[in-house]
Length: 75
Image (cartoon, rainbow, N blue to C red; front, side):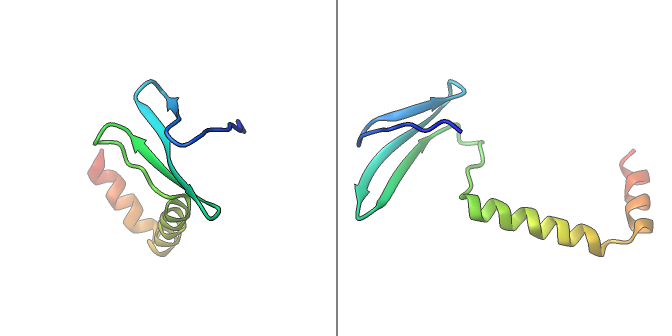
């Protein structure tokens, strides 16, 4: 894990096309701004985890026959 210190207005560049900038610091809360291509999905960590868990649960409820049928259709 990389740990950086940034002041308000300072940022970090990721992958040459994403900038994360410190917008505000107040009462122990940091506001971040993300400059990224519009087609890039940016999710809060807890939302990404919830989506992953939901997808895992949904995949458990589908029978192997349905998956096999879908696989044949997609080929």
